[in-house]
Image (cartoon, rainbow, N blue to C red; front, side, top):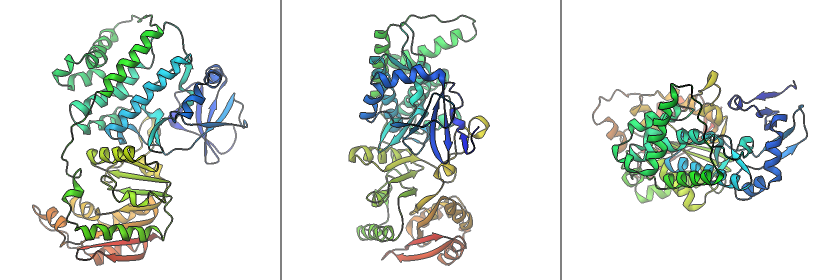
Length: 454
C-alpha cells in the first residue's frame, strides 16, 4: 500500500469503489467490479448531461497510483449532513435525487442507492457527489433504493411538514433513515387520506412489517414505465409538502432587536472595515440567524457557513440563498453548545462539525456572547478556547449587562454573573487572542472586536 493514503471511513460499504485522501486531496478509486457501470455512465452521455446541468459533481480522471481500474478526482465540496439542513434543503436534495434517477433511466441506468449523504450543497444548490452510485438498469426489476429513499428523504420531510420542523434531528440518531413504522405512528390520521403518503409511508410500512418475520423472498416484476411512474409519484408527493411559518425565538430576531437603524448601519460599516483588514476566504458565522451579517462577507469569501440553532431562521436563510442565487453561502442548523459530533461506525462514519471546519479564516460571533455566558452559563475561558479552535481571526460582539437583551435574560433568574464585565471579557480572551481593534457602537451597550489567534 502506498504511503499517505487514508481511506475515508464513510465509504466502506461500497464494494465497487472507495473514497480516499491522498496527500491531502480527495480521490475516488474505482475497482474492476465497478468497470462496466462506470463506463456505461461515461459512454451513455449521462455523466456529461448531469454535470452540465449542475446536478452531478464533476471529476477528472487521474494517473493511477494504485492498481485499480480508474482513479478519479472529484471537485472538492464542504461536507454537511442532512440533519444539519433546513426543510427546503432536504426537500431540494430529495427532488434532485429523483430527477437524477429519472435521467438515469432514460440513459439505461439507475441509482443503486438513494443515500441522502450522496447530496451536498455547492454554489447554493444541491449536487450529487457519488459518481459510483450508478448501475446499468436491469429490465423488470424494482428500484432497489426505493425503501432507502423513503427512509432518508420522505419520512423526515413528512414529519417536519406534518408535525414539527425540528424533527429533522431524528436523522442524527438514525443514520440509515427513519423507520417507516415509527414515521407512520407519529403522523396524524389525516395523512392516511393522502394517497401518496398512504402508499409510500403507511402501506409501505405495513408491507415491510408483514414480510419482516417471514423467509419469503419478494419477487416483483417492475417495468421501466412503472419505475418512471413511481419516480413521478414520489416527486409529486414531496413537492406538495410545506412547513408552516413559525414564530420562533430567533426566527424574528431582526424585527425584535434593540438596535436602532443607526446602530444597524454602523455595525455593517464596522464589519466592512474589519473585513478589509483580514483574510476572509472561509468564514464561519456562529449564531447567524437569517444570515444578514453573513452577507457582508459574500463579496470576498469563497465559502460562508451561516449557522444557527433555530430551524426557521436557517430555513429563511436558505430561501434567501435560492432567491438571490448566492453561490458562497451555506446555511446550516448548528447548536454551538452541542455541535454535530462524530458518529456512526467506530465514531468515524460521520465526522464532527468542528473537525470538518478544520480552520476558518474568520469566525463571527455577533450578539452571541451573552447567550452563551449568561443564557447557557458557559465561562468566558471555555468560549474563547472553543472559538480559538475554529479559526484564525475572531470578530465578536460584546453586549454589556446594561443592554436590554441581557436584562431580558436575567429577568427571571438570580444574577450570579459578577464576572460578566468587559474587563474580564478582554482579559480572558487575551489569553487566546491578540485584540487588534475595538469599536463601540454609538448610543448602545455593545462593542465589536477584531481578534487574532495567538
